[in-house]
Amino acid sequence: MADHTSSAIVRDSGPGSLSVEVATAGQVFPGDEPIEAGGAGRGPSPYDLLCAALATCTTMTLRLYADRKSWPLAHVAVSVEHEKDPAATPPDMFHRIVTLSGDLDEDQRARLLQIAERCPVHRTLTGGSRIETRTG
Image (cartoon, rainbow, N blue to C red):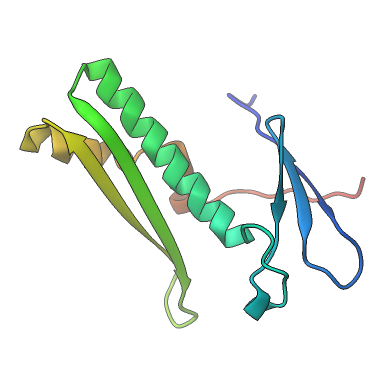
């Protein structure tokens, strides 16, 4: 049995366009590919959304941990970039930069970086997933 279920529904805008409408968690927003990739650039690409998922989860995980420990983490910011190198195994690489602000000592900073490695999306990306596809 699943601990938590997340979902998203995505609808395309019709033939000849890569623009989509993404609906998740009561929010609706556009998705697209950049113009240079054949899209109209009207929203984040699928890999932008994947980077955002990793950065969001890392930020939330660090905030929850620091708050639970009553550590003086004033702010946390996480940036993530994705690149694909077909010659590498695995070909996908995510570069994550974690910026911690506040009066943290070196041990606290080191521990927070360890915790970043344990955020659920990080674990999903590094551990692999199963995907079941069926028609609706």
